[in-house]
Amino acid sequence: MNCRNTIDIITLGCSKNLVDSEKLIHQLELNGYKVTHDSENPKGEIAIVNTCGFIGDAKEESINMILELAQRKQQGKLRQLIVMGCLSQRYFQELQTELPEVDRFYGKFDWKQIVTDLGGTYHKEASNERRLTTPPHYAYLKISEGCNRQCAYCAIPIITGKQKSRSIEDIVAEVESLVAKGVVELQVIAQELTGYGTDLYGKQMIAELIERIAQVPGIKWIRLHYAYPANFPMELLQVMKRHDNVCKYLDIALQHISDSQLSAMRRHITRQQTYDLIETIRNEVPGIHLRTTLMVGFPGETEEDFKELLDFVKWAKFERMGAFAYSEEEGTYGAENYEDNVPDDVKQARLSKLMRLQQQVSEEVQQSKVGQLLQVIIDRKEGNYFIGRTEYDSPEVDPEVLIKSPRPAPRKESLRPGQFVQVKIESADEFDLYGAALEIKN
Image 1 (cartoon, rainbow, N blue to C red):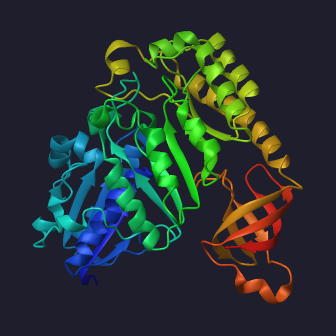
Image 2: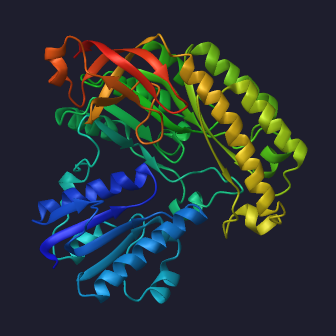
C-alpha cells in the first residue's frame, strides 16, 4: 500500500545530481510533502528518479531503476512516476517514446517545474536551501554547472551546456547557511572547478573563491573535486598552503599520459606538461594526496601508449586513482571522428592490469601511514568501531579509518558524527586504516 502525500526520490550518478535532489526535497517539504531519499523500501504514491547519462553503465542503471518503478506502478503500488536529470536531458524525446509508463520527464535544469506541476509553489527565496541527505556535518557545494572543455570522449557538455558559474557572494552565503546547520566539512564540486569564474569574471577565480570560503567561521575542512590539468591555476596551491582548513587533497582527472592519446582526446596538455604539473603540485603542497581518473582503450591506443600510462602511474604514485575503459558516446567528437578500434577484451585486460598496479601503489600509501597520528572526522558507528576519514579522504570514494573505542574506557560513547579526533594508526590494508583514538578535538 502506498503512503499518500509521500514522495520517494532516488538519486543516481554523481554528487552534483545529489545537490539538485536535496534542493528539490526542500521545496517539496515546504509544500507539505513527506519526502524520503534513496529508500530501500519506497512506499510513496509518487517516485522521482534523478538520472545519470554520463557513460553506458550509468545509463543502464538509470533505465533499470525506471523500469523497476514502472513495474510498481503497473502493480498499483505507485500513482505517479517522474524522471529528471541528465539522462532525460539528453534523451528526452526517445525516453518519452520508449517509456510511456513515466508520467513526466524533466531535464537537468527544469526540475523546479516539478513542484508547480505537482500543485505546489516553488519558493524562489529558498532556492539555495536544501535538506541534506549526507550526514549533517558535511555537504557537497556545487559552484557551477556545465563545462567549456570539449574533450573528445565526453558527453557532459552535450548534456549540461557551457559553464555557468555562481557568484562568489551567492556561494559564500550558502556556505554560511550550511555552517548554521552544523556543517563543518565541504566537498567543493563542479564539472570542472578550475575554470570557475571565467564566464562571470573573465578569468579563473577558483583561488579567490576558496580563499573566501576558507575564511567563513566554522568551516574546518574544504576538499576540492574535479580539477582540469591544462592551464591549472597555480595560485590555488598558495591558498592550500595558506589555510589549514583547505585539505591537502586534489581530485584532478588526467585520463592519459601519451602525447598521441592526449592530443586525440583533445586534452590541451602534453606528457611533459603533465609530469611537470604533478611535480609542481607535490613540491608546492608537501603531503598532498592526489586523486585522478585514467582511461584505457580510447581509439588508437597502442601497446606503447599503454606502457607509457603504466610507467606514469608507477612514477606518480597517486594516492587515489580510478580508471575505466572507453565507451563510445554518441554525439561526442570521438564518436563522430574516430573508429572505436580497441577490442573490448583488450580494453578490459588493460584496465585490469592498470588497477592491479594501482592496488600495489595504494597498499604502499596505506602502509606508510602506520604509526602516524592523524586527525580524523567521525562519520558513523558500526558495531564496535567508529568510522571516520582523514583530510585525505573524500566521502563515498576514498578509504576510511576504523577506530577502536577511545581511551579511557568511560569515554567510549563520547565520539559522535562530525567530531574530530586524533587517531594513532596501528595497521592498514589496501582500502582502510585501523587505529585507536587518543584525543578528542572539537
